[in-house]
Image (cartoon, rainbow, N blue to C red):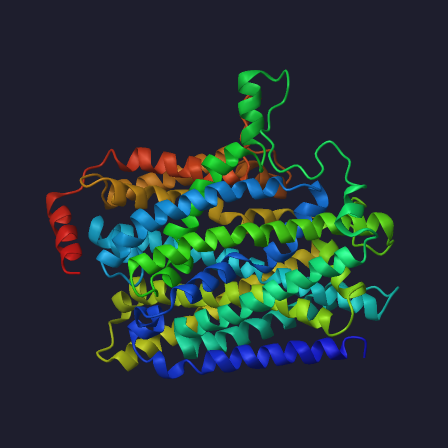
Length: 545
């Protein structure tokens, strides 16, 4: 009965979310209503939905984990690029999508270059998003494993039982989310996101105040233990004295959190995720006009700053708390080192009082369901608009088209469950296998190619075509795969060493992958001309709206 009150809070949360989602059915009876909410959603609701999509369960645990491991705020440097990219997306990308009145953003590339580019880019998005969202579904289910160990201390949970425990949880969450998403469409997604971001902020706010209240002297008392050379550091140029020019460049490319990664790397990351990913852009297009869409997009970047500061501070305070209150039951990795990403969930389950603990757990579910619902709606929209109608024909009635969109939502819910179950199976049976970072970081390998093609389409008028774009996207992927050491990771799964490389060549970290992929893709794609007929068709399509 230790978690009875928490269970009541969580069930009440589920009831409210599903009820709100189902209440939007009456306004989602058309394609425009199901996919874009008839472009009449308030800007502040769009802002909340963007935030809900950005903060996944991985972020909820991962960012405090960064704070715990580093004991500083260097992670927040990446916000600089996030803000700069949002301004560019609002000034260039969003106006183009509104001008061409697109539902799937890959329709823009279809009119700009041809049907081949539209299907290729949409296909890359579908595969990438299914793998990325499916693997992330596994993350919040690890809470159940921690709960089980608390209920049965000293007993061993077999790999098979752990799989069924986590698998059952992620299936339930996915089906519940798919229920209101398939019925209520994008309106259900956005209005439930509003509730979810409120729950999330409350959960983070309470966690911060609870930690400060359990550390003698509060923040002032905590800082007395944070005396390391990089403790509480915010800005780190990433230079190493005596390394030389190339040595420092190589070192910067191999680091995640530096101002260079913020100004360059994270700018390209956000341009890709907020400008070329249907999952994120679709909610931006629900605003009444491009001005309100831009306002929601830019303000969401500003709202990221205090949220990120809070989650990093939670991680730093967790380190202080466990220095003062050592806990031998803290989750450890395979090398006997404390697992930073599991410290916050362990604290939630073992220290927080009942009821409030349920609120914080509901915050975890909010992050999972918020990112999942948007992924389902975006996947269904892209698949139906870019493939299904072409393969099987487009129904003649709005009701028929919406039925196909609901079918697409259920279809991708099934695919996400399959990927999540596969992730769970691999994780519990091979805890040291490093295939998961490859899958979780897949957008870094593919989104540079997407962004490169979009930039050719948006910033040039007569360059790029279907063949050249396909070749360019393949080039971008191969360049990033090699520079990031993907060949080494894959070869390591089979006991190999990958392609030999010179010692001077860096293995780039994730903030840089999309930048190099974009540059490589753009450089190849601009070598191929767009036909005059395709240019005229694109101009005519934009002139209709």
